Image (tube, rainbow, N blue to C red; front, side):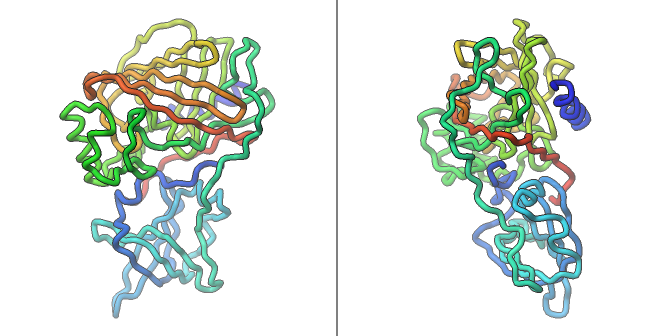
Length: 369
């Protein structure tokens, strides 16, 4: 069971080096919601690729005909809502209401797409809600510890994070689900920054997170960010080898190995068989009913959270996973990075169990800038 379950995911990860319905980057990074437009034109092509699908259409502008790119949600999210690559076809006429690209290019984020021949709204996305709570207790392993993964003969994964942003526990700062601050002057409140890291964080915010390497370069979502993604995560216990696999739905089938055999943090930042490039080297142990994971050895090539908080190679994460009941996983993290912050700090949120479903797969592909 373990071998058949893991090999496809691990192979895909090596080659690549029902979820909340949100986009995979801040829409405001690319589009200006103060600049709206309505387009009417003829479809020329459908670009059904991650991280976002696009419909290309010719639009008359006086005597000229201009080709526009209409950006949509990811194919995964669109498919979950019943849409497909052939929902619209070349030659169809569409009316699109949306917001314009900040750089003045002929691109628009679609808020409403109507297929003219049927007057039907297409590519709409419904807000997602977590599955109903079952009220059942957390299932247990043979050791008596809570089972973080699925039970034998069943499937399931964790998704629907109660928060998709990272800020120090006790701090209240207004930001959108992508980590974009409502007021950039609140930046210093988010975490105990060193001066350079605060300046970098402010700059990323002022640029509307448009430099996010996970979006523009398909970099993996290491650190707490993996628990902020809409596709969720899945634990696979491997007691015989004293380890646990953590599979990511939104990281090109990337995975982490949580070692539970008492080993130390040997490994190189450049990566080796035991130390994936973007996820560090994780050693874990049970403390009562909580799995405590100590991870070190990160590189600096990724954003470790939505919103672009900086980190350095000195980053150390202590993560605590507690399955409080069948439906709920409490995630707590302590961030210790003396290269970027003046002291250690912590945060946390919960995830919900999605029973009897496979972990969704979102493979990042080449896409339009």
